[in-house]
Image (tube, rainbow, N blue to C red; front, top):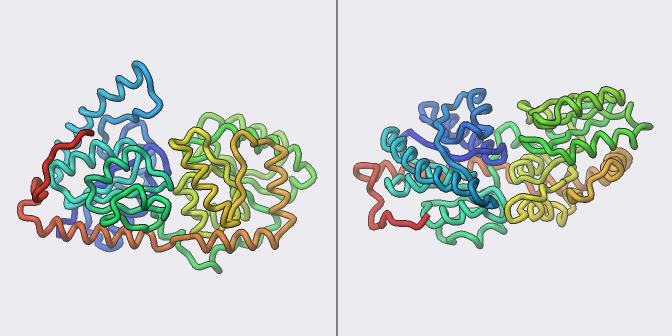
Length: 382
């Protein structure tokens, strides 16, 4: 079996962390496995992967959706450059498998793998797939999806509902998910890997509304880089217990400490929340492609596993009400936690690992490896 795997994807934590979860599982299965990520210099992967110990190959790539004029032209120019870079890298690396975990960087790399006859697995995190994965689904050998709602968008004979890929330390038993005893009610605030200004501003306002309860609260808040100094200073002026960071690296530890999570509704965040069965207030990013974050959030809301607030309705008053309700109604919190835990797919990464091993076995059985995708014509409008 060829022990070289290339994982393409990034740009945001929602695309990157499922890839990291899979990479860790592959390494745990076989410590000799050679794993390389492909991403861009601008994406979160350039900061996170060095800390994770995985090498990163960068290529030129950019998204096209929503861009006009010169910006769209520059993005279009990057596509063939990225394909050429991907072809050269794959011919040199000769991997037994390419995995696309989403983001626009997956397109050039996965397309190049198809031309070269390298087995392909793609993973779709969201309930409504993006344009890139819809297209790549036509050429992938296997497709793993997080939501059953996604199955209809891909060929049935090669699509498997695995759930979203989560890190091993988040796949725990229900009895291990309760926060440790504390004299404060711990709230974890996340705006995605880049932060969310509306959530940041709303939380600062909420502290004023919660003035009578602020001594009972501890807030851990991931602000993103741009709002970090302002939010940190405003919390300090209001005299509330906080841990404010531009980015949280020890996410598993913070999840386990918290009683309530206020966050966006990216698929990876929801996979982690449901794996742990945590009560959450979901605020979908309103400009997400195909409004997929709202679709993701409504799946949890309809199962009484989370509360949803639309971004346009975010205010200090509304967030304060949600926090107060969670603090004062432990029975309601317990019901939502149990419903949330029931939605968790804690074996998702292991299912994806098995797909990888199957495809690596196929690669090993192909004479000559690269360039031997029998009977397939390497022409595709991309």
